Image (cartoon, rainbow, N blue to C red; front, top):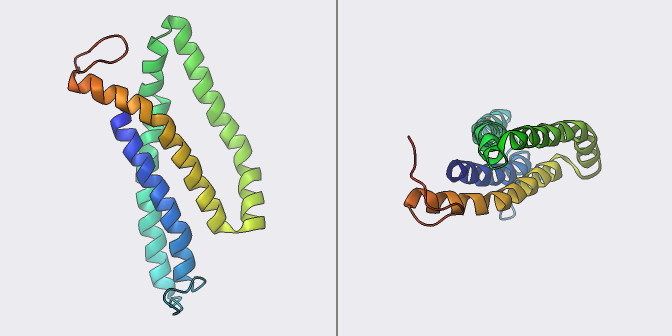
Length: 157
C-alpha cells in the first residue's frame, strides 16, 4: 500500500508547488525572462482545472488507503485493543486537522498570500512523504521476498 501512497504524495506536493508558482505566472505577477505573462482568463481556468483535478486524484487515493486498510494493518499488530487505538488516533488526527484548517488557512492566506498557503501545504505533504518512506521500504522488501520485521511474507492477492 505504501508503494502506491508515497509516490502519490510526492506527486501531490509537486503539484501544489507548481500551482503556487504557476498561478502567479499566469496572472502576470512573476516575470519570466523579463517578460510578463499574459493574463488570459481561459488559460488560468484551464491551468486551475488541470492542476486541481490531478491534485484531487493524487490526494484522494492516499487518504482512502491511510484512513482504512493501512490503519487496519497497523492495528493487527496490537490485537483487538490495537484496532481501537489506531482507529482513534487516525480519526483524532483527522479531526484536529479539520479544526485547525480554518484558522491556518485564514491566517496564512491573509498575511502571506495564497501562494504561500499552497507552499505550506506542499511542505506538509513532503513531511508525510518522509514518514511513509520507512513503511514503503519494508513493504517493498516483503513483496520482493526479502527480510522484513516478522520474517518474510508472501504477497496475498
